[in-house]
Length: 248
Image (cartoon, rainbow, N blue to C red; front, side, top):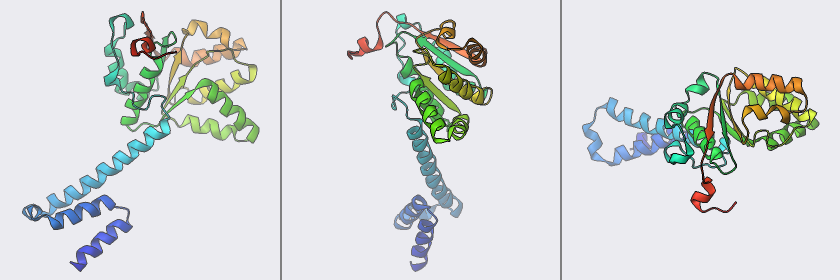
């Protein structure tokens, strides 16, 4: 018995707390005596592995800061007037586009449910243990402006380059200043052909050009986004807010 308690203490000190708990349970339940050593060890390892994978997933979801943290592809509503391509959404949910370093452009009017679908795809990426981040474009530009002032601009750009799937909401909702346009180009260039981005916009790409102050930068930004992107238009006679009875 003393040896068993020593083993439990060692497991805990090695941060194998779930394995320690399962070992105690095996000692207390006579039914485990019918299992071989390999089977009992396998159960201990499985319990610890599952706990660590679940903790990793929880951390990824927390870091993703999804606007709708409970969004999931399974709950997307395919009303006929929304004209959603379910097969396209299911393909995107597999994460293949992330592995291929492609982008996604979600377009639709305010309240169409673009952000929910973007967050649902983000949740699918988290479930595949891909680093994901949701942020509104105005917030991102503010963060970059602050970083520039604090002398950490390059560090912040490098951090965004490491995010496997970046979800940019309110994409080009308003016109950008020259400085904001340059900062945006830096982000897009850093991520181009390295990682993937979901752009959530009320406007089709044809309307983005006029939102960027300098035409050469507009050309550079759009060239890096549009050509390797999956496009999805989210329609609907009624907004999702109206369907859910939510006031604007």
